[in-house]
Image (cartoon, rainbow, N blue to C red):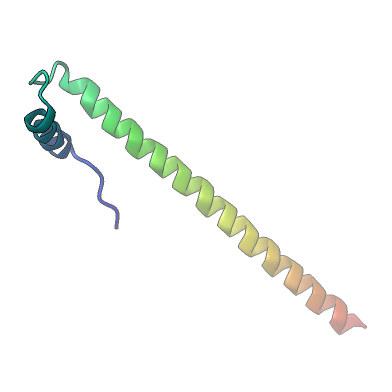
Length: 76
C-alpha cells in the first residue's frame, strides 16, 4: 500500500548526492539512521490513526443523527 524509504534507499540517495555535490562519505552511526527512519514511519502511522479516528467519528455521528431524525419523524 505504502512504500517507505529503507536504509538502502537513503544510502543510495546519499551516494548520488555525494557524486553531484561532494562531501564526506560513509555512515558514522547506522543505528541513528535506522532510528530516524523508524521515527518517520511511526509519525506517519500515528497521523493515519488520527485521521481514521476522525473519519470514523464523523461517520458514526452522522449515522446516529440520521437514525435519530428517522425515529423522530416516525413518531410524529
